[in-house]
Image (cartoon, rainbow, N blue to C red; front, side, top):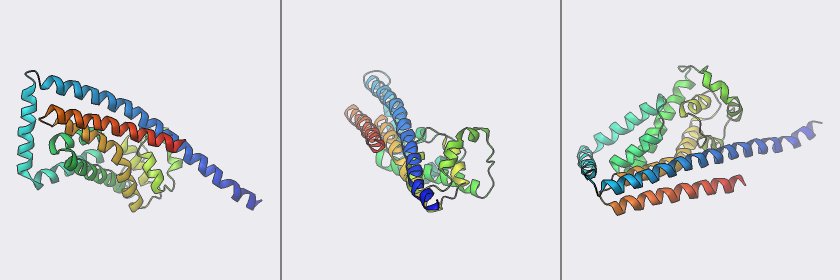
Length: 238
C-alpha cells in the first residue's frame, strides 16, 4: 500500500507544477497586452513630441540625464535605495523600472532596477521571516492555493510565481513564511524579475532618447521581447 502511494505522488506534484506554469503563462499574457498598449502610447507620444512644442520635454529629459551622470555613484546608490524602500512597502516595481530606463538608459537602468527591486523584495522577506510583519493581511486569504504551492518552494517555483499578477508584497510575505532558503529566494526573484524588468526598462530608455529613430528602435525591441517571452512560456506550458 505504501509503495502504491509512493508511486502515485509524483503525478500529483507534476499536475500542481503544471497548474502553476499555466497561471504564470496566463498572467504574462495579460501583462503583455498592457505593455503593448503602453509601448504604442509611448510611440505616439514620442512621435508627437519630436514635431510639436512638446519637443521641450525631450530636451529637458536630456538635461536631467546629464545632471544625473554628473552625480555618478551618488545617483546610482540613491536610486537603488529609494527603489528598494518603495518595493519593500508594496509599491509596484514596473513603474520604477521605466523610470530607471528613462533616467539612466537601458543598460544601467536594467542593472539598477534589478538591484533595487530585488533588494526591496528581500528586505520585505527578511522582515516577515523575523516576525516583524503582519501575516494576517486579509488579501492573503485569497491566495490559499498559492500558499500551498509555496510550502517549500524550489528555484523554479519562485521564478514562476514572480510571473503571476499578484502584488509583490503578498508574494514576499508568503515566501517569508515558507521554508524557502535565502539563496533560492534571491536567485529565483532576480531571475523571475528579469523578463518584465528588461522590457519596461527598454521602453523607459526609449522615452529618454533624443533621437526619434533610437526611441522607435528600442520600443519595437521591447515589443518583440515581451512577445517572444510570452511565446516561450506558453511553449513551456504546452
